Length: 194
Image (cartoon, rainbow, N blue to C red; front, side, top):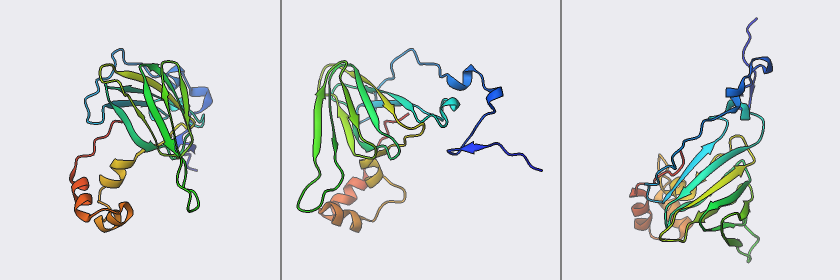
């Protein structure tokens, strides 16, 4: 007989008699991450990949650092709702509702958040955060309702996929000329997730 480890959600479930404190712990970095990318933010996610003990618990957490005028660009979490709390600074946040029957349009909901304010982004909806202050950084903590929430950054996924999506498809979808799509696809689409 072969014995294989039991897997749940794609991850091995450790025998409860063999767990230890390290299965539920992640050492924190003492220094703030430097934000050096083009979008002006750094997302440090702690999920089941970093803490094995999160498997099956349905939760993860992220620290987001924003440079002055930085943003966490429009993105979605296919497997999680997000609740964001501002720790430092100010953030302009928003999300777009799902498609509506014609002639209605998607609704955009937004708010300016200050230190201590909380905002919820429903599962799967496109959302963003932007630091409107040109002089001061901002910091937020996000809790997500999945041990592996996933993230799809819209611009990166649409214009930076490998292989690329046909420019005919994107030109028709965005109702622009193909040369505009070709230019967008030629750009370097930077990832702000660690």
